[in-house]
Image (tube, rainbow, N blue to C red; front, side):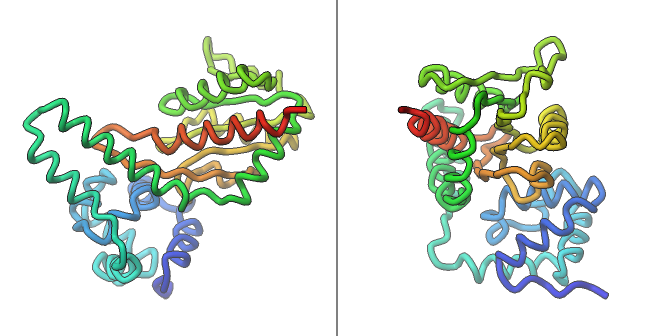
Length: 270
């Protein structure tokens, strides 16, 4: 018997989290793409969303039915009804910019500025203020903050380490250089700050799992509700970035990283 379709975006998010872990690879790609791009569902075709997820439209249709919808149009209707008022039509504006760009660096700059602005506007919607406060409290009490963020997350992790160094906050950046993760340096009174975004770094997830088994607190910065970091008992800060082609804006992520770093440094000040 097919599940009843979600009646709200909140129910949609809950259903997505419930089914994501059990999905096969292609449908999991659909779940990750949808979770990161919910603002595109109301104005995109199933072919466009399937292309973004890297799957065939038929796979995307199966994904819709698994969530309880009769098909894509049924799922799209939920988002159109929920977002009719004040819909941020940035996708249309970006499309127009691309058409007018003619390879101009200035037009390209305008596009990146626009996706960065939208990412920053979304940040206040995705970050739970209670979780942010809890993260600052846990990090401020740590004897040592261990930071891991690899691949596309590395610039964020390294900036946090830099900020902590400037504010005299004891911190260690785990970079994985030479294949060494230095997890044995993490002690009982320390905290792990893990940063990873789709496609999630396996090394980061493995360290979070290993540290969690030892009962050491973990603060996670990640993107969507289907992030594998949500499987663990971690204080999770969600940040959603808008993609532009093959590139992802880091505007909101770095804003959150700066906020977290300064708040922790301030909380530790005598």
